[in-house]
Image (cartoon, rainbow, N blue to C red; front, side, top):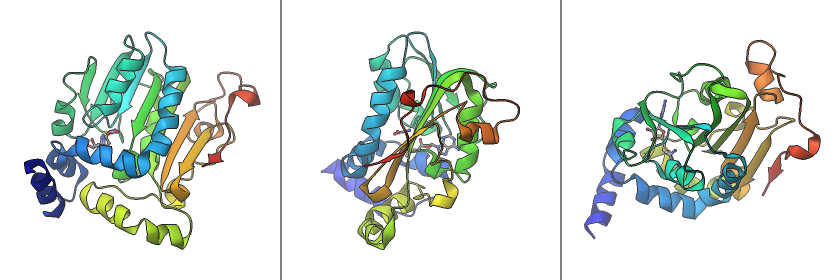
Length: 246
Ligand SMILES: C[S@@+](CC[C@H](N)C(=O)[O-])C[C@H]1O[C@@H](n2cnc3c(N)ncnc32)[C@H](O)[C@@H]1O
């Protein structure tokens, strides 16, 4: 009961404007709201992302959880592959403090200006983060910059659903996320990197959630990264799962 009142107080009180202040404020409530979000809408894209992580993670790989929050995903990664070299980065020190129990490097920093050299990670994973930053495209550029030529970028985000019926149907959910969690449901013009010829996209609930997988040699990366990026041979078509909608 005390938890419920506490959650209600947080939901109804005035929300700060900038994402860092928002997440510093919600940190102690975050896991409960995350679980609710996953149950309502997030699971349909989180599951394919976790399945992909299970498939690609290997011992000793360098993995970045970008915008790690309280470490839900980081704990899953360690459970899947205990010997990965995991870095957890977040803008909010209050959120990051909840990852203290997870073995790895803990970095306070921004996904818009990652404090890592080019080509340093095997996998960058970022769940429900790009919709909370002012420039989602810049965040994804940074993810692509820091992966190795053979690396993977995986991210999930809230997206504006297709058609007015879905938009009306999800209005309450969208208002709650936008008002309290600094998250926007990204419109197509802010997510132009869905339709890459050599990457994967999964959408659910008429498009309200999206999972994207990119690689350095896909056409998205080639378009934004300086210099030649086709540094590994393009994989056989069968290795790439093309855009799919659930
Ligand atoms: C909705 S939470 C998602 C947390 C976690 N990835 C998860 O799956 O539960 C968004 C997170 O992004 C972080 N964040 C927002 N803007 C950021 C930025 N510019 N750089 C790094 N982290 C940021 C917030 O502090 C928060 O922890």
